[in-house]
Length: 455
Image (cartoon, rainbow, N blue to C red; front, side, top):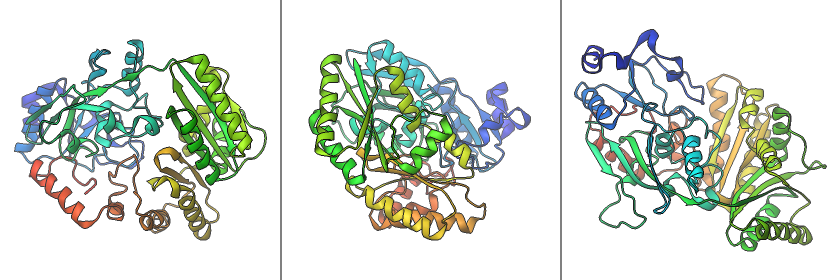
């Protein structure tokens, strides 16, 4: 296989000591195996020829983007050919009038965000890994992030895709229209499929009007129920312009302050904190509306206290606390990180049930709770976890068992990959799993794409 690749692609084929260690793992720190080779195509045609050659030889392939995944979805098990999309990174076109940006899969999210902002438009996909994650990976995992409450997941921003199938067939689905009901919309097969059905090479993404102002505040609430009442109040008062609504229980907030060295924005030791953003088009009017909304909430008793950002620097300082997860993982390693979802109204009860399970079984282990309340996404970090597999599995059951009983999802936004593969049946029934395997067999009959992941 290696000889065949070198005969076709020459020095583009890296193997052995030439392979950068970063291609062996992702942010999950799951130890990967040694890839047979790493290929870095410069075009869709080149990638299609690579896949056709691998398919002809029955050679397993793993596509890689920015390697910011947290479930091992892009980690080679050993012996695969890694196809890195990092060279396919061009922003091909920004069409503000049509509200679209056309990009190659290897383009870094923040680079695309900045280019769209300079052109006067907003790419609404946004997550903490924006500086390293790539558009192809965002699509392949249907990435969520901080703005889902207003703009939806990545799926909601995708108008068109170009995908290469396992045998090298190129599917040109580069639709640029919002309305297109000409048959089955095949792009949705590949959004969130984690590279099992095909490799995303290009995308047409929907743009939003660029906000002229953002209002940000950190507020303290007595409990989750009050946070939910505040969310409903804010959504109604601001006419759906709430663009972020992030919840942090006391344990996460205190850990984030310590890990990031941030200044404490509110004086008292509050049980639950909420970071809220509003994006609008009228700076002076929007600021007054935002402040009035907070004043009404304080008067109604939803809030205990509030800190309103007075500048961009203030807002960035508040977001630094919420985004301090990387520093927390560093300080609490080794960790187990959970990304689950249940109906919004059930998040508080779900968090309490999980907390009770963890406290009963492992009272000495720190457990931190935070999440995106507006879209039902709860994150739980359990720190200083023993290395033995039995303990880790028992902790996972303590979390995922609660989610299963509430008919929630074991993966809200990070995907399944390797680390959640054994728990997928907690959120998908057997008929669904059979259909997923049938799609896999149809589009990749030799099973070369990302073997050992998800299914």
